[in-house]
Length: 217
Image (cartoon, rainbow, N blue to C red; front, top):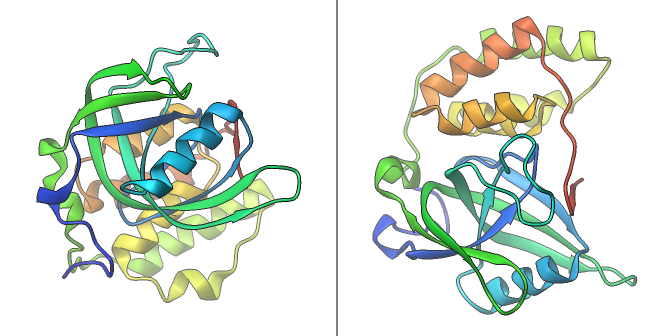
């Protein structure tokens, strides 16, 4: 089974613009809304819209310099699936997860943002949506307890209709786990691993993550 408007593995580019953002997680079956306001990242989004529409989300390393931080070597590419302009010069975009990647080398581009040569080999399975049989209700029960403890709420009806891969990655992307926990979810090899990790994080509780240069909304 494949996704609608899916990008085939063999069509993935070898070069990808990078958006370093602490605490922002994107996964192959998830989505990430972003509020873009820095000039260099506005340039990045406009360039992506004129090209492949792909952006590589990656977290800076803990304690890294904020202007040009050292990065985790694994991130996730997202395709711009919607965008809108605001009167005050911001872009509101939504990235749909495509595939994770490993950074081979990164470099600055003249438009002010960073780009990277990337390798997709370790995550070739990300471009295929598998039919996975896992207990949805067990996961949702753990999430309900977690959200109650955090005094948060979600639209349960929208979650309950999702297939397991979309449910797991949607929860992983949207729940307020710490940056370290989110990187662990990103690097979990397959959906089954992320299912068990999300469930465990909900059962044991998780911290809140901040932002850098833009914000999820």
